[in-house]
Amino acid sequence: MYTTWWPPITLSHSRRDQLLRALLWSCASVAGLMLVCIVAFLILESAPALSHPGWRRFFTDAAWHPTEDAYALWPMLAGTLLSTGGAVLLAAPLGIGTAVFCQWYAPAWLAVPCRRLIELLAGIPSVVFGFWGLVALVPLINQWQPPGASLLAGICILTMMILPTTSLLAQASLAQADPDALRAAAALGFGRWGTLRRVVLPSCAAGLLTAGLLAASRALGETMAVLMVCGNVVQLPSSLFDPVRTLTANMALEIPYAAGRHRSVLFVSGLLLLLLVISLVGSATWVRRALRHV
Image (cartoon, rainbow, N blue to C red; front, side):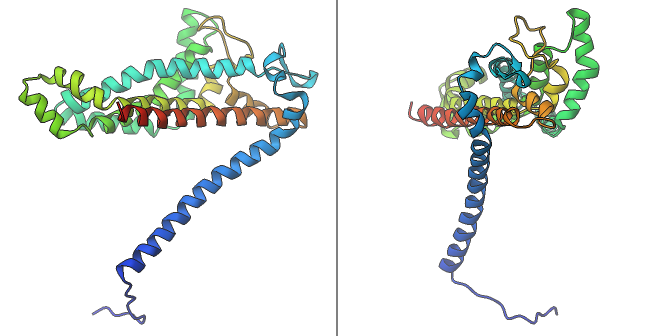
């Protein structure tokens, strides 16, 4: 028989609960401290640019030429918001439709492989999406409307990247539908579509909206894929076929050689992105709480 040199340790349930609570509190504190440190670092590095030339210059300067004291961030902010918004508009119906199909209409032999494929799609590195877009999607768009590397290419790539997030979160939300409400709908004679439209989707609206907002947060922070397919021209696009540059791509391109005020302005870009993500996460939380009380 296996024996140990150390005597067994016996703790009361209350003592075990206290140790577990302390451990979990420590883990949560570390996670929160990491976020605080990141925010503090961004603010510290952005302070020189926020004091001079000042935050208004980022939206009033005519162009982005850091060596010539021109720091217009608004074209890149517009490119970021347009690419993210377009991707969410495409990915939300596709993801929710896929979730509804897997959860309500697909037989088990088809629903399980479909979920596994979506999970696999979520695990593909962003650089692989970008490389595929560069060698396949961009030439295809170029045949339609040059130059190919454009806002449209970025929207398409981001749609594929956030589709798994939208679909998997939507499936998790649909799976939490109240069984009593489903049985009541069946007793009233509702069909499958009637149950979905009148019972399931209204009760899961908060979760579905949260899925869309969190997918938007994912798209806002994407760098490599949009860097490879969007063209990286600092301009306000007039059509889907115009090249654009996002804030993340601008930071990735210029941080290796940036110095002084130029470097500080790039950290302002990071701070702006962080504020956008925080606002989206806060909106998701607010929407979820508001819809739960409807």
